Structure formats: C-alpha cells, structure tokens
Length: 208
Ligand code: NAP
Image (tube, rainbow, N blue to C red; front, side, top):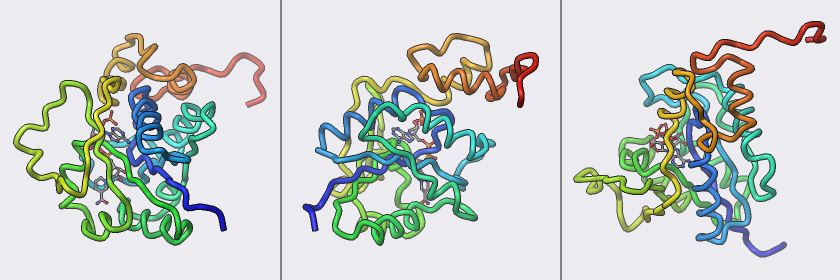
C-alpha cells in the first residue's frame, strides 16, 4: 500500500465555472500539498432559490475548464445521485472509497458560513478538513462568527475576484467574459444558448 494521499474536493454549483474557481483549486493544491483536486459539481443544491443550469451542462463546462490540468478531475457523484445534494453523503462515499487518504473539502467562505445548517454538519467536519476560500476585499463581517474557526481555516485567494453571478450577468448582457471564464466554457455557453444567449444554429449540412 502506498503512502496516504492528500485529496482536495472542490464543492460548488459551478454555474458556470470560472477562472476564480480554477485559481482557488490551484492555490489550494499548492498551499495544502494536495496530490489531486476533484471538482464536485452539486447535483441539486437544495438551499438555492434560483433555477440552476441542468447538471449535464455544468458537468461538461467543468470538464472543459479542468481538462488541461493533470492534477484536476471532475466527479459525477453528486450529479448522478437522486434527490437533494448533501455534502455529508458525498464525503461518506469518498471516505469509503479512499479510506487512507487525507480529504480536504474546499468551497467558498460564504457557503461555509452556513455549514452549521447543513445536514449532519458535525459528521461533515469529521470526514474531511474544510477550507473556506475568500475573495480579495471580501468582508465576512459579523457573519464570520458563524464559522467554526478552529475547524475551518480560511484560504485567502488574492486572484479570485470573479463570481459566477457576474459571469452569468455579463453573458446575458452580451458583454465580454474573456479572462473571467475559460474560452472553451464561453464557447460551450454560446453553442448551447445558456444564460440568456441565443443558441447557435448548427452549421449548414452538419450531421447533428
Ligand atoms: P454558493 O452559495 O453558490 O456560493 C457561495 C459563495 O462561495 C459564492 O461566492 C461562490 O462563488 C463561492 N464558491 C462556491 N463554490 C466555490 C468553490 N469551490 N471555490 C471557491 N468559491 C466557491 O455555494 P454552493 O455552490 O451552493 O455550495 C458550495 C458547496 O457547499 C457545494 O459543494 C454544496 O453542495 C455545499 N453545500 C452543502 C450543503 C449541505 O450539505 N447541506 C448546503 C449548502 C451547500 P461563485 O458563485 O462564483 O461560485
């Protein structure tokens, strides 16, 4: 049996994935000495009030964005599960598959502030080390008191100034998203008419 590995799990809705997520994952990999980072798009994020883009699109955009990095991969675990997405169930499955590895669950600090409302929060914190990624100038304000500090360190990501909301709004307004969203993902969005873009008709004579 080889030495225990350090595995990062990037939890998020990735709607759409953007360069800020990639910078966060790469910084976590370097800072925490991770052997790999597995992106885990949420299947049905039950605490969201807005409509989320269908799982198949979010999965493919995440694959396109991460394909070039040998340390990155994408899991369909949450996407293929029925019902609402609970991180505790994901971590139980990953822990069973990788019993000897050190697991790190990385996600946005805003999401982690609510961790105490998550299903089986204590078990979550036992199954993996949690890491809360912040953006520059991001003020958690008084809400930071809600973070179980000793158990969830903050990873400051200076280059993570981007938000999925801003990406969606810019795309819908027909504005440029170069340097915010990977080019492959932008092309995928336009091809499939996501986020309010007009879908591109297939080229004349295409066998699709
Ligand atoms: P969210 O509320 O959409 O995101 C909150 C903030 O965190 C946003 O600023 C978001 O930026 C940022 N963020 C999200 N994922 C990130 C990542 N991997 N790296 C850096 N920043 C990130 O959060 P969410 O996407 O719904 O949920 C985040 C994770 O928490 C998911 O894995 C979800 O399944 C889990 N969660 C679990 C439960 C539960 O088990 N009960 C409840 C809630 C959330 P962007 O919008 O730019 O991504």
